[in-house]
Image (cartoon, rainbow, N blue to C red; front, side, top):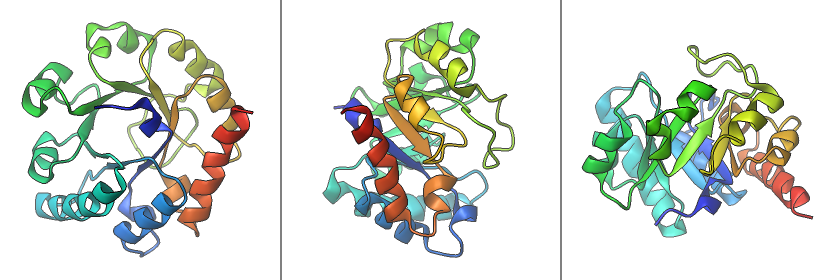
Length: 212
C-alpha cells in the first residue's frame, strides 16, 4: 500500500553522475542518510544492464522496506517485483500501467504545467512529480523551470501527494518544502555528492526544520 511519507526523499539515479562509483554503493550510502524511495532511471543502458541494476537495487532496498520505482519501464518493474513505475506525459498511460501492474503498484506521473495537471490522467496516479523547479542539466528535454511560485500554483491545483524535482540542492529546497512539497526527488544533489550519506542527511534536515 502506498504511503505518501515514502516520497519525502526520493533518489533518482543517473549513472553519469556517480563519479566512477558503483551506483549500488551510492544508493546504499544515501539510504543510510535517510533516502525513503529510489527511482531507477536509465535512458541509454541496454535492457540487460537495466534489469541487473534493478535486481541489485531491489535486493538492497527490500529488507529496508524502501520502495523501488522504475522510470518508464513497466516490464523491468514486473521482472524484478519493483513497487512501482514513474512515467512522463509521453509514456504509457496510467490506465494501462494500472492494468499491467495491479492495484497495489505505486504509480507516479510527471507534470510540468497547468494543462497537464488539469487532465483526467492526472487524477489516476498515486502521486505527481512536479517540475522542473530550477534549471538543471540531468534531463536534456526538460521543460521550462517552474520556480517556487510556479510550483506553488501547481501544487494548489491538486489534492494528490506531490514530489518536486529539478535542480534541487540543499541550499534551494527549503522554499519548495514550504510551498507544499510532500517530498523532494533529487538527482545530482545525491548521486553526484562526494558523500551521499551526508547529503541525504542534509536534505532530511530541511523537513525536520519545516516541522518545528
